[in-house]
Length: 358
Image (cartoon, rainbow, N blue to C red; front, side):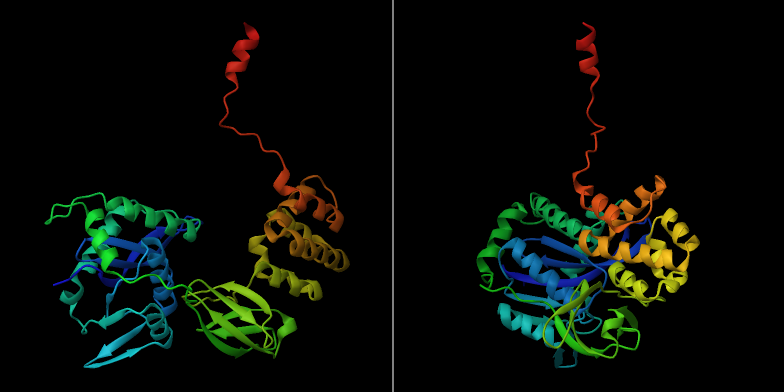
């Protein structure tokens, strides 16, 4: 029998449309409360301990309490049960101790021990992810997802007939208070960069930059990104974490530009080509070695100061007007991009035409 404040946790697969219009499979971390039938979800690209801890903490913050007993599927990334022995990951063990709840792992192949959350996964998938959601910003989507889960609490319980929101208050009263200090759901590792300034992590290569070739760096491993630090604690890179095998090196635009400053000839096979406007790629391909070097140097300096996207827009603007890619022109256009006036096409001015004619 499940009491107020008890929760079940599991992952479920959800299909989404990414910003490029492609179909992708994400994992939804679902927390369900059998007593009240409340259900909450968060979307991630992986099912690691970092994703579980990040998702749980986000849901705790939203609902305002910590479930006192939490039952997990045996296949989640936080640990597993073999016979009577439970082996938790170090990150989750610290997370559980920080929040003070009791945890329990299901026996392998015992879906009946977490039947409520399995039903909740299907329910949220059918009601909140059909038709397939298009996700341009996963942070914004997850925030909206929590709000939509709140809206589901206005339904009546299928058996108790009370509103789920009223029953969920019993969960809240029975739950644990939020800790004073937030837990940081990351773990750390130390790796040495190769001769090209790349760090290998989980079978993928992450480019930090040639300046760090052969140096030892500390990695902060989170649910969504990897951050790289020197031994004295200076952050030198932040890249999106890839949960599948990537055939190419994962790099930030700025890191790729920094490399091209000293090796402009490498532009012909740089991953940046697919991220730049077609006109800019064509112009750099046709430029002499010295002109290409000067242009890339200007692009790099402006990108450092104003951001990659603003710099690309500025470069495209200059090329459309057959103007050179000087740093002064790039800086001027890129820095003022946020203040350029864009008329609102939704405003209907026809009424003023009528008044003027009367």
